[in-house]
Image 1 (spheres, rainbow, N blue to C red):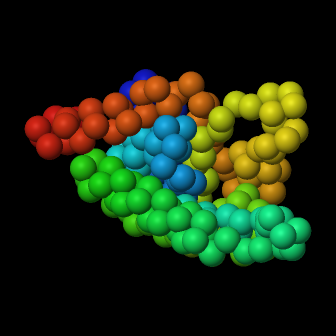
Image 2 (image 1 turned 135 degrees about the horizontal axis):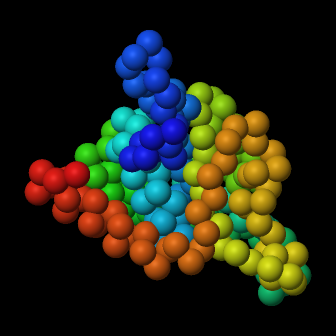
Amino acid sequence: MQRGTVWGLSRHVGGSQRMMGAALFNRMLVAFDGSPTSSAALAVAIGLADVLKATIRVVSVVERLPEVIGLGGGLERAPENAQMLHSESEKALSRARDFLKFSGVHGDTLAIDAGEHSVATVLNLAAREWQADVIISGTHGRRGARRLVLGSVADALVKQSTLPVILVPHYASKNGRAEIASAAETKQSGGH
C-alpha cells in the first residue's frame, strides 16, 4: 500500500496505479439535521468527496410529531410545530448547500418527511433509492439511560443498513464547521 492515498486504497494494475477507493464511494448520502455533530459528518463527507471526486446528497429527515395530550384531555395535533420542524429542516439544508458550494464538492440536498417511519429507516430507503455507496452520519455518543430513553438513530442506521455506514463521533463536532470553513478557504485560494 502506498501512503498518501485515501486509506491507502491503491494498487498497481499493469504498471499503473488505480484508486480503489474511488470505485467504492462515488455517491455519499449524509444525514444532516444542522447540529454540530451532523456538521462534523458533513465535513468528513466533503473531505472524502473532494479526494474521491464523489457526489454528496445531504438528507434531512423531518420526524412526525407525536400526538400530545391537550389541556382538555383529548389528543391534539400541533400543525404549527410540524411547520416549525419543516422550517428548521430547510434552514439546515440551506446551510448544507452553502457548505457544498464553498467546498466546491458536487452535491444536492433533500428534505424527507418521515411519516410513520423511523429516521433510520427513511435514511436507509433514501440511500437505496439514490443508489448511494455509503451513508455518513454523526453520532451523539449517548450512553446508559439517555440512550435507552432517547434512542440512537446512528445505532438503528447501522443495524438496518445494507450499505457501509461511516459514523462521525460527537466530539468531532467541535471542529466540524471549522473544517468546512477551512476547506472552503483553501479551495477558494487555489490550494489543496
